[in-house]
Image (tube, rainbow, N blue to C red; front, side, top):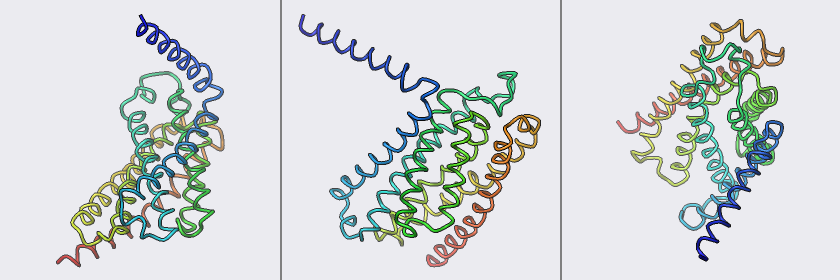
Length: 274
């Protein structure tokens, strides 16, 4: 009898929680605010948990300088965001029918959903938190190129979230975050004194392949997609049209510059092993 009462209580709390999520947290008008706050909160939580976990389980962590520990925690934060937004981007672009050409008469550039808008809001929260850290500890966490990258990403993602326009192309660009975990792992291996290990070499090769696919070839595909659907791109707000063309072009140039550095780094690593 007591157990059944407890079950009924639990179900009552569960139904209230579900109602709260549906009517408040996921209400269409509140999704941007909820998701941005959630993204910032998640970043803070991951940062603090990484600090606590690393201090106990990684001996090399305590030997790092204060700024190195900050970067260690910050990279964990960016890795979690990258995994989340890459998963959401791949699902919405390639698996979901939201942006399918034959799914709706509405232009693909004007389509959105509660899920797509929420995920972008979480990403906006991350870019706000990470940009704040980059500026606060400047230039320890990255130079001006990181500031430019984050500002462009923040503006483009925030516009797409708020106006619910051009979300397909925003997600195509966000797929490039798939390279972030590999880049961060490379830094961790270096910080842990494992630069000469086989794991470091394999990680470098994986970064090269991932970067080529996600930040070079995928951008070529995105520009081709824009070309095929340019009549629908023309229906965007004037700011949206500018962002769809300008932001990916600038990021493409930055990606090519970084890719050349990755190739040089990989060559040096391979040369040392011969």
